[in-house]
Each structure stands twice: as structure tokens, then as C-alpha cells.
Length: 189
Image (cartoon, rainbow, N blue to C red; front, side, top):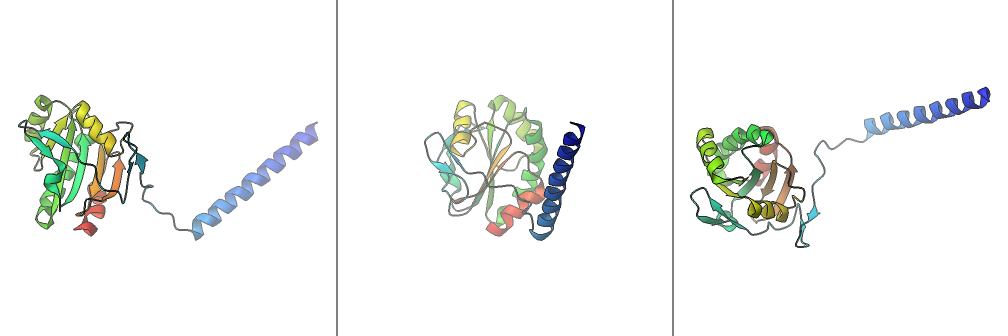
């Protein structure tokens, strides 16, 4: 019985060694794409949302209570960021969106915030941070907009990059750093 266990352990060690060797060999030969896989989902309306698809239409209120349609920004490179004041990673990346808007506005970039929050929370934070891009808000309505853009789980932050023709180029579920934003936006301008 002891020799059977010894043989079994030897075979297992050999299989692990061969698999590890193959993995190292494969890793060295095939470059790994560091970008995450693109997110393509089917929203609640049964429409596929993801890179190459046309952005869904929506209207939400701005911080003054005026309805604003996303089509207002047609023809621009549009970066829609879903966020909330209570979301730490959202708050971390807002200065990057401010910088992005400052740097590329003249070249046709528009950042658009969609806050899943109350305007009584968003407005003071918006002014305190010196946000230089429009922010729309909503609660259930903003969640529905996020779902239409493929955010089925409601995670925040959630950012959608859209080209001048209205096609979704990239979706990022989770926080972004400034260099990631620039890498996506610059080729679109």
C-alpha cells in the first residue's frame, strides 16, 4: 500500500511538473494582452451592449432639475461615468475625469457623470471637487440607464467610452487610473 501511494504521488508530481513547464513555455512564446476582456452583455431589453454597438438613448435630470438627453453630446467622444458620492473608488477617479475633461475638451471630448444618488448629496460634492463636466442624476432611473449600458449588477464605478459616431468602444467595470483613460481616449480624438 505504501508503494502505491508513493507511485501515485510521483505521477501527480510529474503531471504538475509537465503542466508547469508547458505554462512557462507558453507564457514566454505568446504575448499576453494586458487589457481586460471587453465586456459585452445583453441588457434587460434584450439588446446586446458592448464594443461596436450603438449607445442606448436616455434622458436624466441635471443638477438644476432640467432633463438632458445623451444625444446632446452627439458628435463628441463621450465618456460616461456612473458613480455615487458614497462610492470610495468613484471619488478616487473623479479628479482623473476632471483632468481628462480639461486636457481634451478642445479636441472634442466630453465627460458625462451619471450619479446614482440624490442631488442634495451630489451638488455639494460636485462644487467642492470643482467638477468641470456635466453630471446627471437619478436613483432607479440612473440604475436603469446603467443596465441599458450593460451594468447588470449595478457595480460602481462603471465607465463607458463612446466614439464620435455613437459606438461604444470600451466598457470598464471598476475604477480607472488617468493613464488608462488617456490610452482609450487619445486614439478617438
